[in-house]
Image (tube, rainbow, N blue to C red; front, side):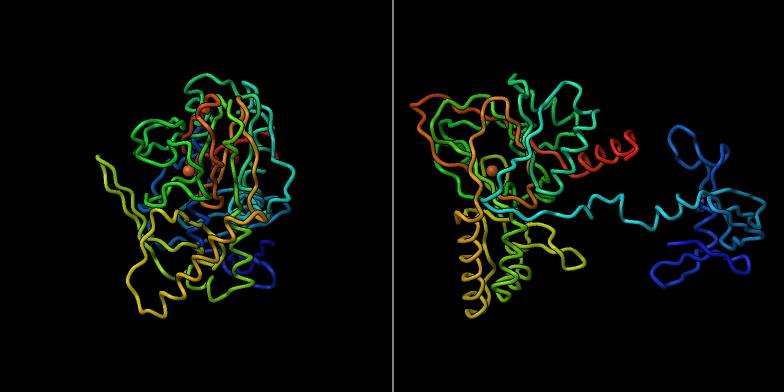
Length: 366
Ligand SMILES: [Fe+2]
């Protein structure tokens, strides 16, 4: 990537393709105290009030700087690096390479909690691991009631849902969700019926005295890639058909339509939703439904197979942070007569982790 000049025009060259940088694009980026507020980095002028026919009167380029004088009398000195950064994806969390994993994964991305962790380099490392693997486990987190709220709000902002600001996972009478029983929970994603679906789930183990109640995780990304390779027809239909996800209780009816495997604009993995207690496929031709049901059975078989399911026990003080767009989670059954099992959970969205990660990256000059 480099910047070039020709006839008072600025060009950006990348991989053999050369494009002119619009003069107005540069004019919007003028810096200096009278144009940008030092503290907030926000503009002190409104670019929509500038006249449209901005042109470059004079321009010069050195190793580090681009100096531009515009036809409205404004002059600026921009660093080449700041311009190149705008054309680079390296700062973008979306481009962190995901690492595929299955049940053979032995490193469970453990990070030891400390009071000051939210402003330390170790939190940066934990968040990078989170984006690579889709989960991390913080160890020795204080087992105080509601500490999960403090934890979540120290990374970003808690995302409230119909289950409240946070929820208590323990068996209780008349539950409105199977999570609040001692029954086993097959791998699933949470809240597929919400729009938008909460991005990240935090689950904090306060008590776990039972011999069962193991936590399970499955990498939806790994399974999706496997399905795409071995059964492209199943992959295609699950990325095409939007199904209705539904949650109903006494207070609310929540519904959202989405593909079971959602791809991004470049046809890459974006999100999986899986909760076969809550999904309703639209009525389609019999042949198409035959294919859809076969595809759903196959992906369910993969999600539930020993090959992909990681099984481990959360101990008091463990706080599991997992990507609800990428991973499926569940638990094995337990016997309430053996003792207490008490977890607290809540959600945060990607802007929380991305914002924290970029802040720590800036702070530690990474
Ligand atoms: Fe869940």
